[in-house]
Length: 312
Image (cartoon, rainbow, N blue to C red; front, side, top):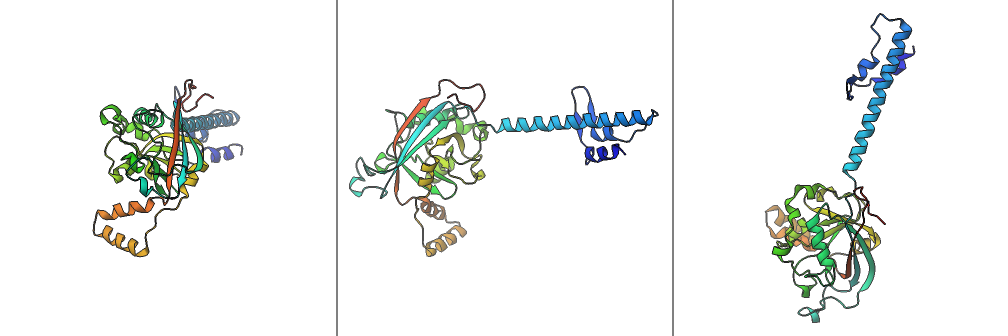
């Protein structure tokens, strides 16, 4: 009568648990007594064996959960950066399209996006991003725009091209070659799981024809994870403050085609016309110039030994 409830709790299914010096079988530990020992002794041994097996199972489950948590922990922070963002009423100034100041000189400010960068997880990517954020760099994000908005998923900036068109001056491939794109570890280090994930936007760069040193980056907007970005883009940081600024960028209207244009695009895509995808790319362009007006970066000189935890 005492062991019946224990038998039900211990053996809904068979499970073998490996101990340091022995293999314990939960069913065996809870099995009916078969020895010739007195009934009371056999019952006591059953209870102790069943309890030990359950304790080992609990320890194994806890250890596995802890290991899984560590595997998905935030990478170590090596640098911090910021982007100040504002908006202009139009994409470019027609009177300045062939000279400096292609975007408005006094945009309406949205605020500051503060970032933490994972220099251990993606060292080349972080090095290049720092170059784009520091004063006096070979190229800069200042005066460039967020050029793509994917509603409910992410926003993209850093398109390379002419600075006269509010794009990033391409980095020299000999000096700034990004070796992270050849490392499977860099792609698997972190996921696009939370809003504010900062990632090297390789898919967007390929779609835009940016085949030099990749400078495009994306920031996920939430509310849901974007797993389709995993494995093809490299996570190298996260937003720590300014998600409201990211949301304002993401809420900017984009160019929307007419129903007729959508229908023709669907037909072109059906027959394999490569121009269909290029036309759809224009649907994600914002109707206003979302300008990065200032940038900055600092090194995290002292970090905790635990991965992903930066010292104050």
